[in-house]
Length: 372
Image (tube, rainbow, N blue to C red; front, side, top):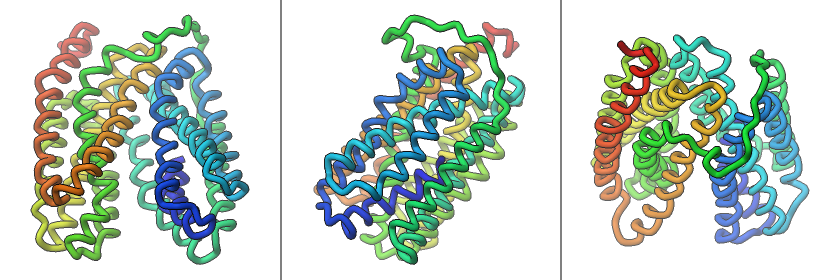
């Protein structure tokens, strides 16, 4: 699923502009439809996976993503592509939200961090493979072959969902209400992650432009370093979470992220630019699965849908806010300065996580008897 997502991220704008002659403004509108739909779908998907069989929800959403990928080359107007991209975003929101609770259901509670950590490495793997796969096929074989290959990869995601051995449990359906779409226990961590995701969005969306402004030709190396560091840190942090080291993991992740944004803002040479990719990838790679594991361990199994949707909405809102804020500021202030001052976002997040979210986590776990 992540492979398909990151394969289409850089290729769709190129296809829309070069093959369909769609304006840059309308391309931005079409691409934004995905994020809007994903954000709106999160709370609804949380309700669905808490009140229906989670594997079924995942399989259906992945199947519809596969269908959407096959329809892209059949459409050519802004309105139809906007609607299709909106549907794709909604299905992504449902599939992405439902997969983590399924992992949490499968793994033993004592290995929650390791399980979520292994699941979380699929994103940097997709981030590494997807763009090279999509752009390589688009440039060498054209859009039709590229879309066909993406559909093939998407089919594999459906097969994988079918093969997953998920527990079949009776579901006690609750009446649909606004309160059932969110979970209060996920809010403290989500508040902290919101500000981190503003910085994350600023890096992922604008670092290519920043590299051009600075004269760095190794932006591909930056993303490779970012993805590899994220992969390794996510894989290794899970076991530490299971041993109860939530506070040290959070501090290390915050420290690495702070160093990363400062390195990025003060990068005067390509090697410092790559070092910023390693530091940021490591920091975000520790914080994302650690916080998600904490959210999943705080709630009952039948509440994980609402908890995960609450948590993941902070990602969508943070990245969206980052795009809007940095986009408007970049006309007046250089990206170099913006990245330097992103340290205050990290400090704000650190204050929320250290003084609010972690004490909240320890109180809840102590009440459950998990922490003596």
